[in-house]
Image 1 (cartoon, rainbow, N blue to C red):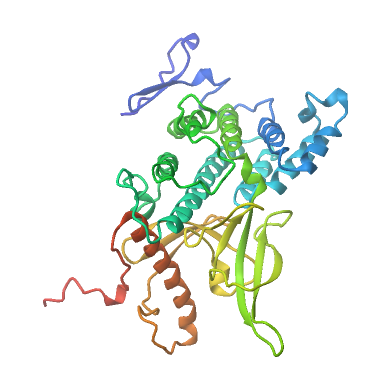
Image 2 (tube, helix red, strand yellow):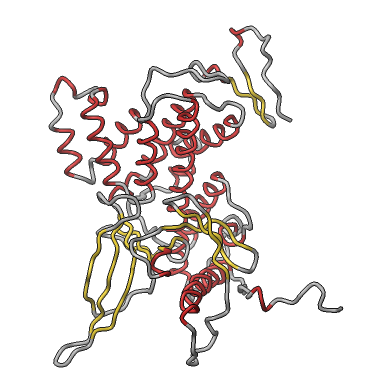
Length: 423
């Protein structure tokens, strides 16, 4: 049961909030209270400085920026608005899309005039960035594990219980559940002697260490979520969230060296007097692109690639995130890209996805247009899109059955019996 703070308490004792079996001293967060107190500090300063220092090892352009700062500003360049804004731009530009898009929003909120709405929006955005980054990493690991388990049996010592929620949950998972799934995935890789797709992760024990930066940040966000419902409009809580976000993203700083690339179209090209080849059309997200706009890449190759694939890639790594993260516009033949992440399962009828650009939700339902055999079939124009959506769902079920050892399937809603069939 939650307890309201006692306004008659001696101020020297500090304001406390009790949630469940925990008691938090809010005054340990500078000047915190239940009203709005404008802060003299600026949002995003700590976050920007820490991230720019961390990602310089991957980007000569970032290192060059730091090297060109005059000596008298070397230690506190973040206090100079010109340098701070340049650093923000470099952080936005170089982190993989999804994270960079969230950071762009966070920086924009921080630039707004101080107000209760600003503080609430800033804290919400910190929590959103935290969750989406966890999803991106977890879905990358589960997608690669699917490829590795294909045709193989997992080691008998594999604990699949925690990650089963990624496939079977009927409600939106909390960030702490994604933390547990991420750590369970790391253990699965270790038990099954599978190399992580991210070579930059050297020691998985760093992510299990309760005293390490990653777990301290995750636990810190969990506490903030508990406090937040009773301590809104609190700028100092925002600064605490910013500190945790900086530490958390430092654990995944290597994602500043990755891109999201969407397969928009692939064509088989075979002309007279030439070898057959495939023409692939990609959308490159991020790297100075605005919102969901993208740069296009045309590339010839002798081998096909997975249709509708969405790749998380660097020069050394390529992970196909489909169907856990998809480019919705590739399925609907629309221009540009519209990236969405798996949210939860809608019973046995479909999957709910979260759209990054407008933060909306949409459920893709199974239609049964795609047949289980390879026989030719005639489909109407309006069924073409449903066919693609069925591919998304069939790929999800294949991943689940391969990893968890289940024999699940989606059902077409219209094919299900009525509750009144016996009347």
